[in-house]
Image (cartoon, rainbow, N blue to C red; front, side, top):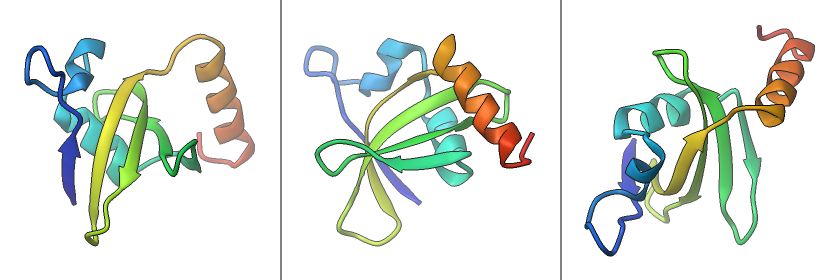
Length: 95
């Protein structure tokens, strides 16, 4: 999968770094999402767990090229959203 990242104008680094997320973690979630839902303005929201066990929400756009995405942002899923996600996964028999 080809993954491009939204970059911070000030630093030139991927925006996800501001949230303490790295590229490998984003790839973990995108390749094996627990959920992948439609977002706003043609975006998608993938929620899943990294290999290290961290839960993330990844907001991305599908690129016109096959098997290619543009990641807008990614951040930790915690608190009530994490609890709700885990509950939905249990109901589906995934965890």
